[in-house]
Image (tube, rainbow, N blue to C red; front, side):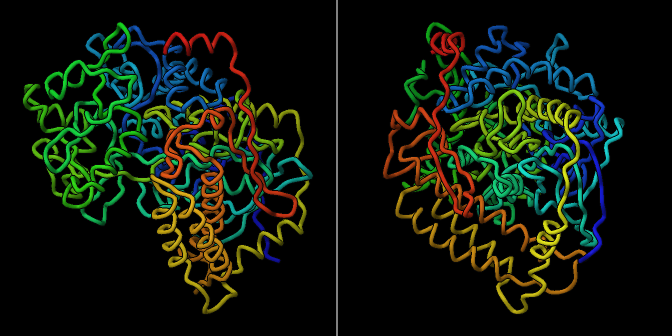
Length: 603
C-alpha cells in the first residue's frame, strides 16, 4: 500500500469556482481551518465563462424591481418545481452579496449617477443583471480569490478527488491525487462542501470546460446522498458553431440583452413566430419597436430573443430542422443592426461586449460590429444536483454540503440567465457558514485503512489492464450517445437505446487501460473521469424517462405537453444498498401563504 500524504482541516471545499471560493471565504471568516481543492489552476474555474452578469433585484435601472418580482420570475422560470424557500432566500440575499463583492474590490459597470449598472436578460421582468462588460464571472473569481487568499486558505491546485470518505453515516474527508505527480492525498475534514460545477462534458457539444465531468454529483451519489431534478439539463441557445474547433463555446446572452436579434437564413426574426401568451407584442414584426412588450398594465423592454433559454433553444432547433438554418447548421445572431439606432455603435458594442468581440475576431475572423454571428444550442447548465436543505445546503449525508451548479433546488425545471452567479454567491456563503458551524460541533471521523486501500486499488486499476479499451474513445462514444439520444428533444425509444449503450460503455470504462506512469498522465485522468460521467449520464437518462411530460428544459416528443401531476413532485435518485439506481417521486411541500400571494399578484 502506497504512503498517502495526509491533510487535516475543519472544512474541505472541493471546487474553486464562485461557489467554492465564496464558501471557503465564509468558513474561514467563521474561524474554521479551510482547504480548497482545485481540479485545475486557481483562477481557471469555469465561473470565468459566466459573462452576462449577476441577477440581483437592486432596482438601480428600474425602481419597480424588488425581491418579490425576482422571486416570482425565478419560480415561473423553474416551472414551479423550484424549492420555494431557496428561491426566497436567493431573491432576498442576492443584492447584499453583490454589494459585498463590490466592497471586496469588484469593479462593476456604472449608471450615470454612479450606481451599479444592470442589464436585461432572458426571463427577468426588469433590467437586473449587475455586470462588468461581458466578463462578470472573471471579475467575480478575481475578487473572491484576492479576498480569500488573504484569509489564509490552504489551496491545493491541480488535485482531483476520486472518493468521499465516511465514518459511519457521517462525512470524514476525501481521497484524491495530485495531477502533476500522481501522488495520493488523504484529506481529513469535519465537513465537506461540494462545489464542482456541472456535467457538460457528458455531451459532445458544450460550453463547459474540461473539468465539468460531474465529479460532485457522482461523488455525492456514491457516498449515499440523494440527487434531484437530474432530467433538467439546460441547452443554452447561443454557442459558436463555426469553425468546428470552437463549436459549443458560449456566446453570452448579453449580446441579446444589448439588442442582438436572431434571424434565419431568410433574414426573418423567427422568434416572433412563437411568443407565449404571457408576452403580448405591441407591434407585428418591427425591429424598431419590436422589443417592447406589455405585461398587464405595465410595459417592459423585452425582446422575444430574451424569452427563457429552453424556449429559444427549441425555436432555433425548429428553424434548422425545417431548412431555414445558417450554412453550418445554426442561425444568425445579429448585434451589428443597432448601427441603425445608436450613434457610434461600433464602439458601443466593443465597450459592452469586449470578450465577444475578441472571441469572434480571433476564433472565427468575424467582426461582430459589422456582420452577424452563426450560433446554435450548446449544453450549458445542470439544474439538477445534490438535494440540500434550503437554509443550510447540507445533503442527506451529515457533514456533506453542496453549493452552486452541483446542488439542486433553486432553478427547478429551467434556470434564468444570471441566476447562476447570484446562486454561487448566496448559497456558497450559506454552505460555508453552516459547514463551519457543523465543524465546530463535531469531531474528526475515523478513516479506515481498508477504505483507503480500496480507493487506491480502484484508481490504479487502469494501469493493470494492458491492451484494453482506450479511455478517450470511450468518452467520445459516451458524448455522442448523450448528444444524439438524450439531448434537447427526447423520446422514450431513444432513451431506452441510450441506456443500452450506457451499459456497454460502463463495462468498457471498467476495462480501460493507460500506458506510462502516474506523472502528467492525461489518459489516466480521463479513465477516472469516466466513472463520474457514466454515473451522471445514466441518472439523467433514467430521470428523463421517469418524467413523462415536457416542462422547462426537459422536452419530450412523445409527451409534448405539461402534465399537472408532474408539477407537484421532484424526481429523486439514490444509490440502493445493493448498488442499484433507485428513483422516487417526492412531493414539493406546500408554499408558504405569503409567497403564494406574491406568485398570484405577479401573474
